Length: 494
Image (cartoon, rainbow, N blue to C red; front, side, top):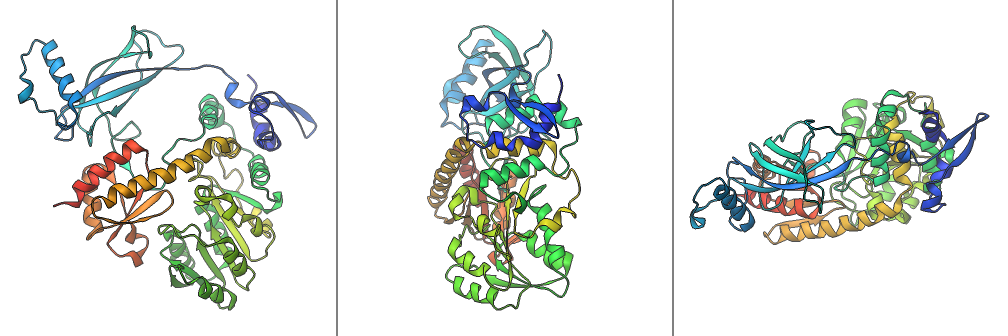
């Protein structure tokens, strides 16, 4: 199969993927003229048409060091007793302890061309209230198609919780999306993984820039793409600042800004405490002309504080360049973004990560919007955004029908997480896709939670003004959050 259409799709997919067409239209062939060559751009996920089949079953994981299901989950106790009786052992139900055993689901994808004797990977997930599967062994579990009696595979063996395999570890210390990318994104990356891996991407992500401009309603010339927000930050700030520069930075704030400005560039940072109730003072400082740059993370990470669009607009009309980082704005509302203003105002630049809101953190892709970013194109290395990232971002940007409900679910999950923490008597501040919870000794709680495979963030490590008493916890799916709350309560200690 010829791959030229996929490469051209990266260059010219934007007009096709604007959401202006119906779902059936988007699945149809489109034509584009590129440098005199006629190509066909089709829904890339449909190229091969090879589909794997999902099979599943249930099993028991044994040998857990007290991290299995508790007595409250009776199904595990019953399954264990039935298994032992089937093996010829006489078991007294009243004497059975199941805390070293966990009932699990076992899921696998059976490749379309599987042969007898072949090996497949399986994903093992807890059903009950087990806190960890580390060190356990999966007992023989037959795997079937849902609704079918025939067994197509069996699963058994040691549970791996390290490396890249399925794991009981909960990484609530980073703010990656709890939901997967849009199904179309996953399909494209799966079907075309081999070709994407060996093919150089378009040099300057032309198709991605065009898609961003059209989807976000921006002039094409105002968009500059990067391999994540940090790539853009490290490209822009060193050319705006010198060791003699002064920068206004609200605290607390995303720690990479202070590190780059103070440690790498050597400029002076004037810190201003959270802007809640201090917006007028912040605007005056920016208008004073005392600063070469003012940085605003909006919504703020980690406090979740949001500065209104009109207040930013007024500040951006001052004499100081204003950089607004909108990494989490997609979770809030596009109407509160100032990226359209950044496209026309000389002193305003917006950076937007596509990693957080579109569930693409592993792809590393972001963009900046500004009226005068053209010089930075010559300082951008060629091919700096991978083919995987370009394809994923193009298709994710054009699927708001998938992502908008995920944002609403995120807010509901955050409220449930906060409610569960408050029931423990904790003080909680709700952020965007995270919460902050106050504890007497954040570092001690973080370490105790880590022993139980729950990773949390001591917020004071990157935001010193928060001290050692605030922990940031990322929002996860409902089932994972139930485990998180159980582990967190245990980590609090007596």
